[in-house]
Length: 199
Image (cartoon, rainbow, N blue to C red; front, top):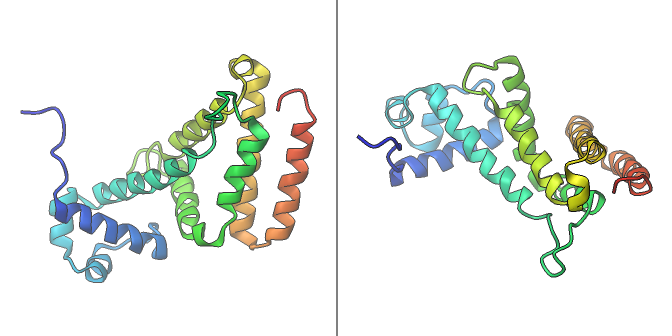
């Protein structure tokens, strides 16, 4: 028997995409299989068959959301023409330009929900989501730093601070919708970082 799971069927992929669209609109916290199945043209029995359990479906939905998150992270990085690192501040500005767009709010609300649930329920379907997203984002930010800064204590602290700034501003924006105030705060802090020893 193969150690690798079988590739998902076309029907499983189709239902996962439909369930993902449903989750973006309704969230995952109170996900119930019966209304979900009715909304996407399936049945609880079929969903259990395809995903193994409700937790299995939630794990698949979190993995699907991570695909979209990683697509965001594919943007910034080393400058492809010069080979030079973009720098933390330009990377943060590019990431923030994406995060602040209203059309991305459903995905980001889902991210915030999953992040919080993974802290409260570390052993369930949400296990590891928060830690993996921190690792993903720190990895991206490290790739944007000059090579000589990446493995230093200051370089690690700088990218951790930028991640905290982005995450804090994002949560504030999701909570209040006050884009002008949050934009101003983010750019104020990035200005301080730009003028600091590690950029």
